[in-house]
Amino acid sequence: MKGKFISFEGSDGAGKTSVLKAIRADLEKQLGTSKVMYTREPGGDRISEQIRRVLVDRQNTDMDSRTEALLFAASRRQHVVEDLRPALAAGKVILCDRYVDSSIAYQGAGRRLGEQAVWQINRFAIDGLLPELTIYLDIPTELGLRRIATHRADQINRLDQEQLAFYQAVRHSYLRLQKADPQRIKKIDASQSLDQVVSDVKIAIHTKFPELFTDEF
View 1 (spheres, helix red, strand yellow):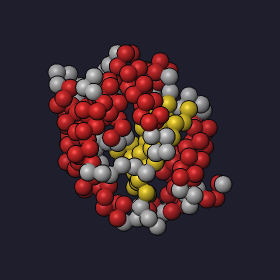
View 2 (cartoon, helix red, strand yellow):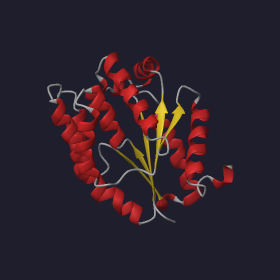
View 3 (tube, one colour):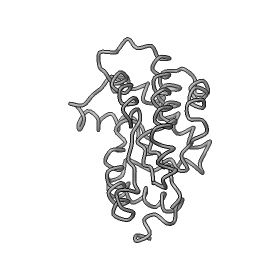
């Protein structure tokens, strides 16, 4: 089977972790664990995880926005070389928790560095490797923040310590990205129940890759 690259995006509180867990479990039942690779950004391998620790450290509140953007791109580059391309060459289905769209939304729009400027940094880093399918879990900003406060209060990191306007800018950026590339980026209403969101995601994946989730459609 040809390798497939699926990324998952969404503002904080959209429920990516829960959705990914369900999708991963069902795909592993169909394909076997050796054919499904779950990974995340920033992170995924030893070097990228070291960069992640710097990025999420709550003590690094004085980090410059451009430094942050460059660190994300550096982590992503290592991830592409060490993890993503080899997995695709091995015919695996990659489920990636965040990828380049996150940098455009969070650093480009949220940090006001400019979406095109951040894209150019990451264009160099990814060297042409974009997901074939991106699942964008969309949720109203206020609802997402309430979910964080309720369910993740003990896991807040540096990147969670932002104001409402920051997250609103991030969401609007994601919506622009989806509108500009609807063939790759599929928007899912993440304010629904988890079961419904997972079902909608499976439909989107099956539509793009008919050989996946064949027992359900």
